[in-house]
Length: 319
Image 1 (cartoon, rainbow, N blue to C red):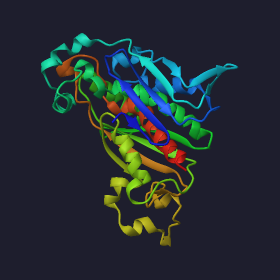
Image 2 (cartoon, rainbow, N blue to C red):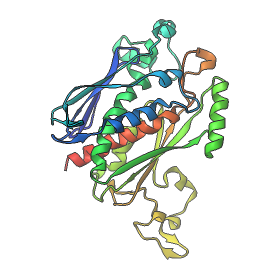
Image 3 (tube, rainbow, N blue to C red):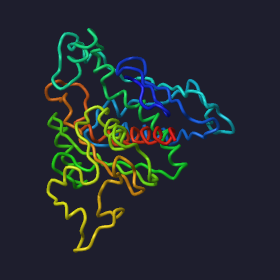
Image 4 (cartoon, helix red, strand yellow):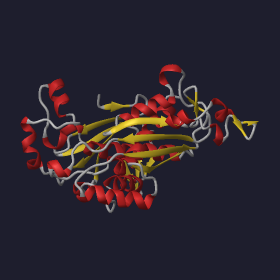
């Protein structure tokens, strides 16, 4: 499945070492102003330039968006036409020769074998469609969704919370440098908050807000876990911790309630909070050579924001 969303949809295309990756966004109303600066800023964050542990390829890919349809420039501003917005981002620094040995080999922890088993063939160059290079298109599409949400007073912010067992930002950077120097990889956790989301977003039972967010996050390369509110930390709590503070009942909408802004699968009007766990990268330079991130979570931050924006905008577009 290469299309995400029903009422506000994004279709992704392209392979890691093909000519380009790109997408088609449908559901943007005619006359909507689109800031290219917002899109460039999110793509620059995804590149990870200047951050420790980032693939050298990511640091040099220009990631310039070429708009194919759905927008027109008027008065120095880009305006949506109300038709599908198609764009592509050309791959400029692919080194397919680095992956020639994979033509007849499968790497542990990758989609090499499963793609071959499902389709009977695969693009072995850099992982093809399963490569995180595809997330550049997600970020561009998500940047459009973020702008639509910002017009409604809804903001989405994600950040790197933890790498390995380390949570201090300075020590995280030192840890990443050490792991990169060793040619190894390490896992991390990205946290995200949605502010300004009104109460009532989400559906009971089988289309809960947290279920849709979880599906979106788990579609990101290397994401192996999702929780919201207290999440797995609630293992250390009792029911009274959720309902009482200093012997007094906790207000259902107070920060102490820590439902994560969601109850019964529906937003309650407070800040929505969730976390995503990213595994250590399966390909490590010490064994395979090449150019690889030592921590997927570092560059996943804007991807988490993008997938969150696409999820929320699809919900709101259905109303």
